Length: 131
Image (cartoon, rainbow, N blue to C red):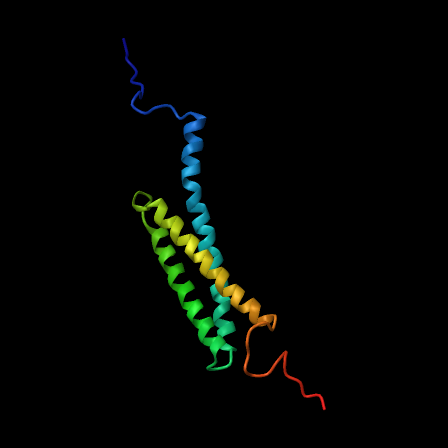
């Protein structure tokens, strides 16, 4: 008489259990999307910064925001490179939320300057050369 050994150690994967595991991991997808968005935007910030006039309040402010975004993006990248067992959900969620906030701040800074709403000492929207 042959006895086949069945695995009774692992509980069956019910749809609810699988859905719970999937929901638990969605933050990793969100974090990777945030990392992509930040890196994508950062690649253009270097070109943008290159053409900004030297000195000036806007350039200083822009570079400060750019540096903060770089640091936050690097921190997020390091977290996501870890083994899944070493990743702490709350830390990753906080980090990618901060990265997205820093990205938004940088993009808003550029948008405000582009709309002419920023204070600019080099002439511009408010200056006039009419006789």
